[in-house]
Amino acid sequence: MKNKNKSFRADAIGSYFRLEWLPLLFVTLSGLVYNVGLLAGPWYEGRLAQCLADILGGNASAANMAALVLGYILVTLLVQAARFIKRFYVRRFANNINRRMKGILYANLVRQSRASLEKEGAGELMTKAISDVDDCVEGMRKFTTEVFDTGVALAGHVVMLLVYDWRLALLSLLFTPFSYVCAAWMKKPVQRAGAAYKKAAGALSAATLDRAQNAVTYRIYGCEDARAERYEEVLDTYEKTAVKNNVWQSALPPLYLAVSEAGVLFILWFGAKNVLGTGWRVWDIAAFTTFLSCFTKLVVKSSKVAKLFNSVQKAEVSWKRIKPLMKQPEQLEPLQVPQAADVTLKDLAFAYGDVPIFSGLNLTAHPGDIIGIPNHGQLRIGDCLTEGEKLHFTGIPSFAPELLKSVRALDPLKSKHLGNALRQIAEEGGASVFKPVIGAEWIVGVVGVLQFEVMADRIRTEFGIPVAFEPTQYFTARWLEADDKDELKKFADANRASMATDHDGAEVFLARNAWHLNKAQEDFPKVRLNKTREQIF
Image (cartoon, rainbow, N blue to C red):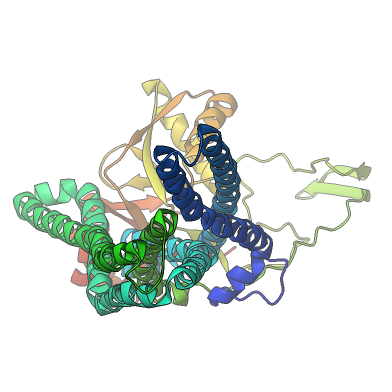
């Protein structure tokens, strides 16, 4: 995964912010316009209340009210336009980081061995990692929103309150910091609830995958009821932790808001004295309404800051978990493809024994041409034609297939020909082919689902045998190897129903599921169940 910025560090949060500087610039400019424009709201509300009182007292007309309403509408439209721009670029910022983080996460996971992923639990690992990335990005999004939104708005509202009456402002704002203290005090319970929920979600994913993959095995061995009971326990734990996590996340913000709103009592009492002329300042109705509206908006903003604390705390926990996986994937060297050129062969000759077949043959092959020797099962991938030297090539591996299916000829009379076709395709490296010791079916193994369709079409067109691929009971294949041949024979006798041979005649163990594979390895520790087999030519 390439990044234009060479100083980018996948395991540093700051690098993601620096990489998205352009969206953040738009967020900053639109956020300033939005939050400064918000200060006009309380002022207009106060002027409207005063104008209404003046109209009732005969000191103003409806035209004055209409002018204020028009101005209020225009300011509101400007504020909402800035708000739309800000939210658009905040979402773009979050989406870009989410895509980049998941790209790095996937790139690192696919570079891990299948054994390590199976050991950690691939389903559980992916569920937790993706959930943690989403939580981390959500925390970054809310942090960005509130820093450029709530922070500026809070500062503006506080200044506005201090200008109108600094004593009453300080008195009414005493409860707001207390809500922050409550948020900090609830930090650990929120983290514990979030961590427990993610753990339960991962366990449920692993249990669901296990129940689907091994359903037949559990039924055969009479463990179905026990596994169902265990699954219900995991599901019950997940439901309880999900409810507890939602309670912590949803119930706390209203609590913070209620604590902060307690300052309204001081405003109603001392603000009324200011209006009556017996308080610290002399107010009219407009000043009282503006102060009350400004305080209410400030409290609402401060409750969002408390909510921000919860999101940032969740993001911190999530980042600590995924940070080991957030490493810059190693860059692969670009593939060097040589320039296509003509190939000229001169004075070719061939003889069968002492009888010459042809000589003096010249030919030229252009880019795109295929040079081949007519052959029917005699030459394979890795074979080498020489003038008599005996050469052996080692280190060419065969890999255990990811997907297994049984194949049958739609015309039973062509079953024998099907075997020859499958062996030829296997010799070419197009797929893995296994012949079980018991039964007449053929098992085909591939690494991608589309290979089955390609094979079916090739067998039909090249060999004239329409075939059908059907699901099989087998989960994976392993080549057998042991230092003691007697151990190998004991293994084959004990697992006769799962034994097969590949197209070279090598013994293969076909496991029905992961449990069956692990059980066979535990019963015969001296027998190696290999995912690859080295071919020698």
